Amino acid sequence: MTRFRPCIDLHRGQVKQIVGGTLSDSGQSLKTNFVSDHSAGWFAELYRKDNLTGGHVIKLGPGNDAAAREALTAWPGGLQIGGGIDIGNAGEWINAGASHVIVTSCLFSTDGIFRERKLRELVQAVGADKLVLDLSCRRLGSGWAVAMNRWQTITSLRITRDTLDSLAEHCSEFLIHAADVEGLCLGIDEELVAFLGEWKGRPMTYAGGIASLKDFDRINTLSQGSMDATVGSALDIFGGESIRYADLVQRQSVSAS
Image (cartoon, rainbow, N blue to C red; front, top):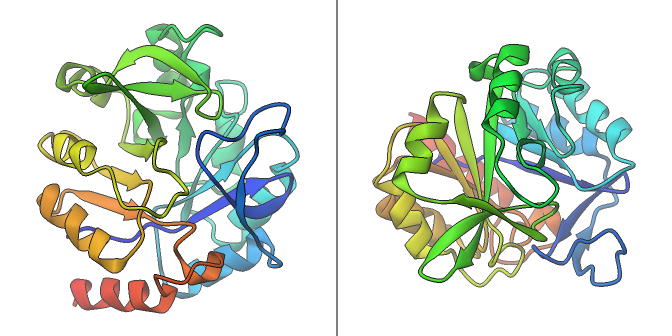
């Protein structure tokens, strides 16, 4: 059954919800749905109390390390971390309490060419069992391509069964960001979920566009229960009005019983 994976998205040290694809170095096009008064540690403690594992802390740009460490200290071993992770700091974040590190951009050249050697080096550094690959998907023609640099750069890596098969041996799971619908609360990318749900080589967590509890049920149906999901802007603890955090926790506890 599709499980709820919680998230903590950090921008300049604050917990925020940002519309996917609007985050750039200049910040001029940034669209923010929500800025929390609570700290990253507050959210991590909430997830720890409700025994929600496998969630992720995402550092969106600089100025987020202290907040990220606060979250990992509050829920050691309960959260993954991504954003600016590379071979030089991956082990440091595992030692800081992250269960896994999440990577995308460090696996590509500046112009978006995939470098398998970098992936192998990361596996040697922390182990495939500690590595999550973030395949941030942007639609390209009739399919999808992986995007990096906060979803601004389309890479050479296409989302195909062969790609998934090739990457699977180097990681523990995949985090799928449907960047074209991220933060819009207008529904999931059903075609993407159905395509990925047919491939069951590694655990996957879907993010993007979830607007109601029915979307969780839809992901469960389309993926035949093989994909988990995370939700941001629609959730009441992030200022949303269509999904109650308490309902997701209850849904999870019922499915586990």
